[in-house]
Image (cartoon, rainbow, N blue to C red; front, side, top):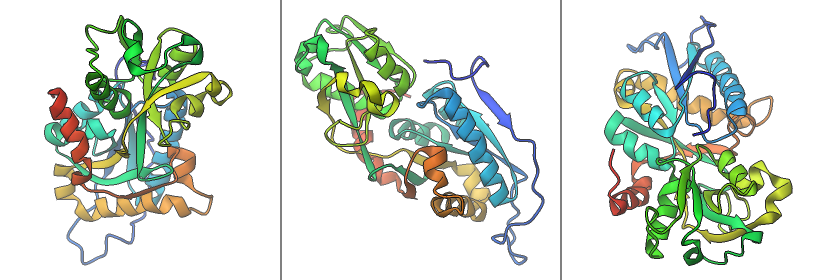
Length: 301
């Protein structure tokens, strides 16, 4: 895992600014009291410096909108964000599709919204360099492969299943497998020749809008697309169920606050801070295809 922060495992940043005005959602007749503070968890996957910067700004914006202190909690890896919700260190979190499947069982995560880039779905792509001479997945036998994280949907789950369908055992048929921590580092590792192939996200079904193009647009033409997955449900925004049971009105206000960021007077803050065009309502059933793949590989919590 690429180390996103200077601390050993997890960064928790308290903005330390209290906003004392009451939000209109908590009307006088409501028996629900808003929480004194909340903690928002972010999953690694982007440039760690940018993730921290944008995460802090997002927390400030939400804090102003909601009228409560908003803390930021950035996990070192995908499992860390699940553990943080399980241990009640965070109240809300953005998960990957796969990590949500585990978080739902292990940490009581309840899906509320999902990110939308170009569409409500995204894709997994397996890439190599054109100079490698590799033309198809079967030719990966004996080659080195870079995954993102064991809880990454596009960076591990979907490609792992596809490699299995091609008759490739990642533990036996690949010369080396590496978990590189986030999509940017995976892209960099491929371009620098540290691995022969990688699996990363793509925002298009042809694989052309992959993580490599996202992070290294000037070098995207060096990449050969070997495979692109079926559509994957986008990353969900979740609440800890116990927190939701205590603060349902506040949680609804949180949802609307995120939805409204697209139409902020400063522009689309979702695009600026989360890199997505919008967020939309989501349900747990939308992630059934991911659950099926988890069962197919017999992956455990």
